Amino acid sequence: MKKIILTHKRLISWYQKKLRLSDYALLWFVFFKGALTAIIIEKIFFN
Image (tube, rainbow, N blue to C red; front, side, top):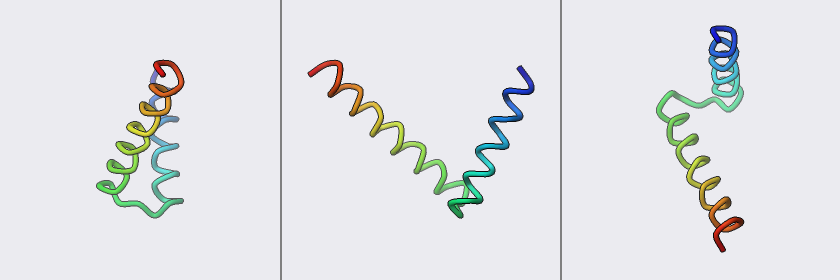
């Protein structure tokens, strides 16, 4: 389990550096990504 957590943290750090995002900007990016994903899933399965 620790290996998965460390890999996840490494990937987040890599994406943050690659996209040049601050911690705050990364949180907003993830929020909107999740909201968009939820809307798409809702349209596919419940419409």
